[in-house]
Image (cartoon, rainbow, N blue to C red; front, side, top):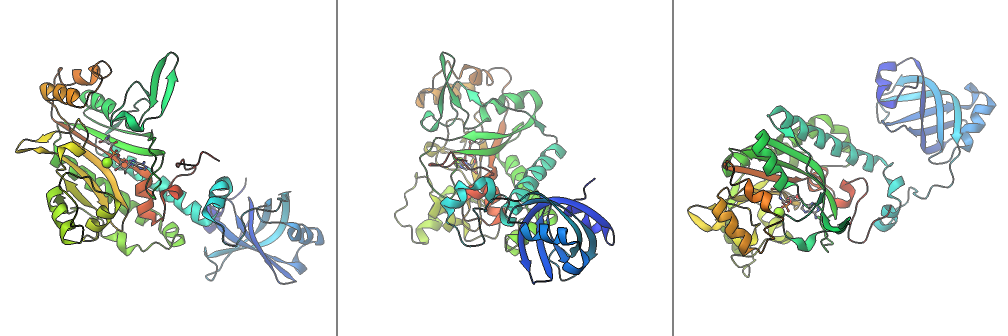
Length: 430
Ligand code: 4AD
Ligand code: MG
């Protein structure tokens, strides 16, 4: 059985066999230092010429970057070593001497790296991001599963849309038209009436011609939906969920955050309660901060969100947006029908909206009225209307964008690094 680098601390003083790749190599004539990675971590192997056979010495000399190999050696604790351990190598067996590796230690442009994404993910930085992404997913599920939510999977191929058809990927479903889902929400509302508290976790698709640091064409969303839950209750779930995720990453991914050079003092404050401001208050803030031209009724763009978030050390909820800028299903504020019971959660440090959510319209008459105002195809949405006819109840839900959340927690410049193989406006390869 092979030992892994992650298990090394339990093997101090013992001889182990690892399977891995050569990440980097240094040599000082009589000693070769092999930087090894095995997918679970990194360790330096030290090869002393006088202590190995000439064959082993020669094999090690031939190893190129990313050559695959087995090595045997004795584990030594060493405080100066990056991971705290080194391997005194006794044997090296090359599996393959790799061809000249396209990604070298020198600086590469982003397009080059994205073209070589299948190899780029081997680097310590990308590995750290993908590890944190997995921890974020794990902790989201831990929170939701531990708080009475049931995982329900909505379909990906749908006959109609949820947020308007302009941004949908069209495909044929035999003789019918179909679209890739842009949100599972409508189906999750049906599921909430069956299982009360539910969530989905899956890919969603937006055929938006947006080329920003925050937009992907294919991204993953977590969509909780809760029966007998109003707008206020939903905000409490959201701030608890996001805090749990951030605190879990801080606890379980220290080393990865260090690899990324993330300033963790900016994450430590992320605990409930999160500040809240209404859309009206946000507009006032913008007017005072130099955005005098911003008019009530417009939606916020990235610069507006960044400006609003600057005043806070944790994510901020912006609530009660104008009805006309939000989706048809959002419940109007009974005291002020020109705004809806909704909230966007804006991350700090310029990362923008990570959650969009609302209380849903539960009144069948108002829902039908909205269908007409929005020219929704009544036939395609018949089932959704029926949810309001057979035992309607107050309910709310939200969608958390996974990659936006990963970007923020990791401190990334661009959301394309937050997903293993990004689909962006001009990229479908690799
Ligand atoms: O605000 P959105 O569009 O909300 C919905 O789709 C609702 N139906 C969710 C619900 O209530 N169940 O999207 C939700 C979140 C955004 O806050 C953002 O984090 C992320 O999804 N998101 C994107 N992430 C990456 N690339 C894009 N193009 C994104 N569009 C939205
Ligand atoms: Mg939104």
